[in-house]
Image (cartoon, rainbow, N blue to C red; front, side, top):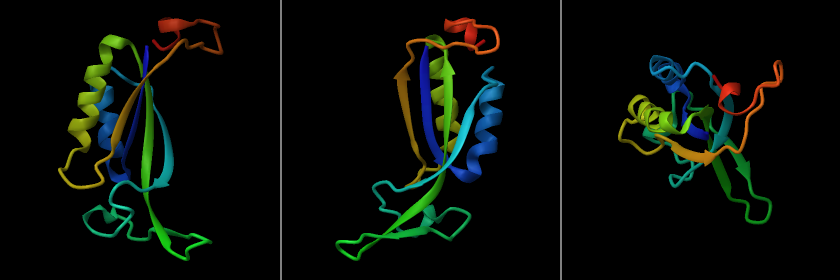
Length: 125
C-alpha cells in the first residue's frame, strides 16, 4: 500500500474528487492549508480565486512572507492503483502555471479499520 499526498489549488478539489471516484478511488481525506513554493507566495497567475493572501512578518528581518491557500488530499491505495491515482491528480490539476501543486508517494506499513479490526488491504477496500 502507498499513501499519495497531493497539494493542489483550492478550486480544483471537486474535479479531483470526481476524477478519483471515476477510477474507483472513493475515499480521500482533505485538509485546508496555506503555504508557499518557489514562487514565494508572490501574486500573479497563482493568486488563486481568493486574492487575500495571508502575510506573516518575520520578527528578525521585518520581511513579509505570503502564504497561498491550498488543499492537501490524502489517498491510501494499493500499489497497482498508485500510477492511476497520480495520473488522475496530474490530469485534473495541471494548468502549466506556477502553483499547480506537488504529489508525494509514501509507503504505508499497515492500515486498520477501527470498526471491524480488519487490517492491510482489507482495511482500505
